[in-house]
Length: 358
Image (cartoon, rainbow, N blue to C red; front, side, top):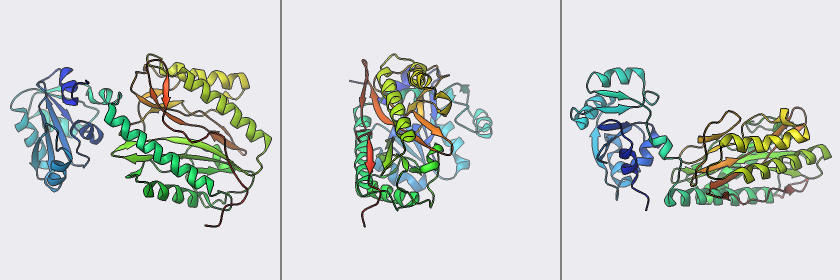
């Protein structure tokens, strides 16, 4: 059985206490999802959640069943005093990247501060069974929404309309929220990796990049498919085939112990063979969890090594200005010997040159 999250944090402490302040770290540790909060973890594994009085009832509900003490505070001016009281004169480790300089100065005037990186972001990388279940549920919702909306046809609809339909369908299926603003990029707009859906009307012959995800219980999914609308030019079909080949190579390179850079290089090796690496504008993947982009990162300069239990994306693309773009992305769980794919929408998607009347 995996030790409790508090025990895992306490095991690596270099001071008597650790201050945990990023919202996603507080949620991972305590279960509390609100804002205006901070948590303290002692070297003995004691967890104290300091929460704005307006969120006290919510904090009590969300931390139920966890060994978390709740301290109610009123106003930011009292936070430092409350934290100092919890510390009780003992040293507190603070990640300088997670707080403002002004807070650090004020806090250091009240307690002995040990500056150092928080262990929580690294501990969040490997997901436990509960986290994986939420991510899988989010991925399943996204799969269903993608297939439903594409099945109704895209031609004749604007990018913005397709985005709204996807978001509404994920909501109907039980998502708490979207993982990030849904991307729908059609025709030449698909050459922009982070295009914002516009009033452009999707037409016969377009390739449409749809990048989407659902959020369930704070955990997110991420998936991209590129849909052929009606009759698509051979140039675009070749681009799709090359990206599919590159993605298969990337997926085959994912395993516990593999360097993130090696996964990225497996993708780029395919592009180099086809003479298209210059049209690949981003890295190959990233971790996903309580945050849509978290470590590990899989790019050419990545120094991180993948570990079993991490959830990452593999999302190569090609982008040709004036022509369009293709991206194929799956969400996977890293295993000791490879990976387990969590997104199951077919990668060869197409729809007719006219949408259903709905």
